[in-house]
Length: 108
Image (tube, rainbow, N blue to C red; front, side, top):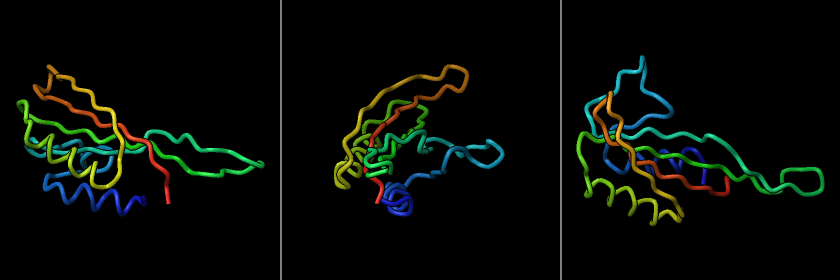
């Protein structure tokens, strides 16, 4: 999946979103999504990168627990063939829940 396809998938979730951080670190009212590619784990063969494998972090920020929004995101990830792990944290100083989906996929 390309960067453009991932961005299109996230846009289809219907929430404000950005790559890495919002401009001037001013986020919109929650819920919103922040995504990035923090690392790669490429397969190497014959002195070259045989397969480019990216890790996608998709972070959902909400003011309260929002099962419906989580289900929307999970449905989009499933429909696009992403296998993911999910974690949940509460950021006290921001008073926000952070739901993180981590998935590795082959970059096309």
